Image 1 (cartoon, rainbow, N blue to C red):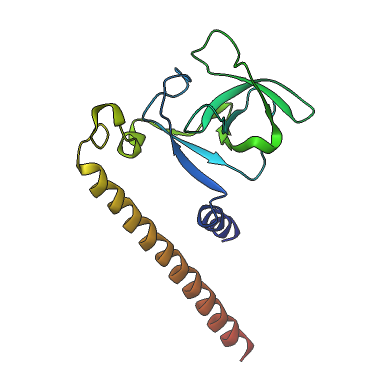
Image 2: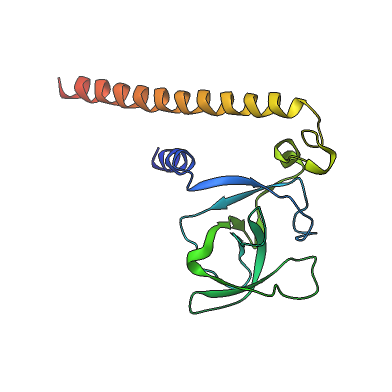
Length: 169
């Protein structure tokens, strides 16, 4: 129950979330259109971590691997790139880190395509006008999911209290 409650709180307060990848700079680890599970609970950079951070020259956050880290500073590089990025990222600039199991990030292949707008073609992403529909479906599912979780937790608490009350009689 505690683990379940932790997962619900982490998702509700956006301590853990999925992010759509918008470039191929991290191939073969993940590619454009994948969703990667990120967390912002522990963001201290270590070599090998995959971090998401904002750069003023880019409109969207960058998601790259840490190739060097020391004293709260990190040098990053996309896995598909030859050289490290020309900047140094401070720990305070890190938005989130990828959740990794055994050194591999949790990735949902090609699901992120539904969330990427393709402005070059002046249409709603790879899937055309159905983007808005799919986005709204996911929003509704998320809201019903939150409601279902709250109802489940309340039911669990009420049933546990009833059972405890019955034992005391």
